[in-house]
Image (cartoon, rainbow, N blue to C red; front, top):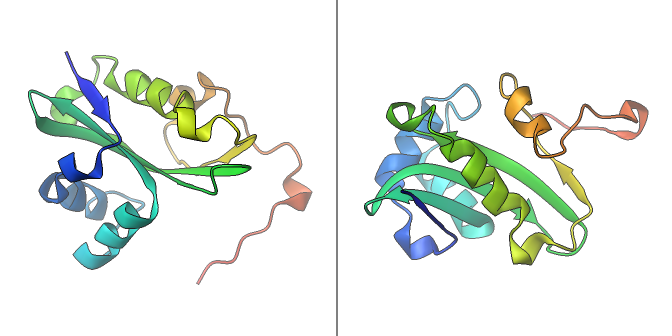
Length: 132
């Protein structure tokens, strides 16, 4: 049994920071940067017996747009449906119900996100990015 909470006081930086900085998407982030991302976003912690086993965060204006990032379940806890439970909690979060545009980037988890309505960008010609 897991619990999922948006209470930032429960988040365990000692779990989040090493996972993110060892991921393909988070290499090079400092501990301070990871903490800043937590402070600036709606965060979801996944816990089993008060031990954090997963995480996701959403950068949002709470009215129009939500950007899903840093989603993970620790390797020892995968294959048990926890990532689906996490995604259900994120998508159904009361705070995000007005957001009609959601985005994310992934190299390898398309199957998970498609189950929750994410698709490839349909109007790619209108999407731009600035990478530094």
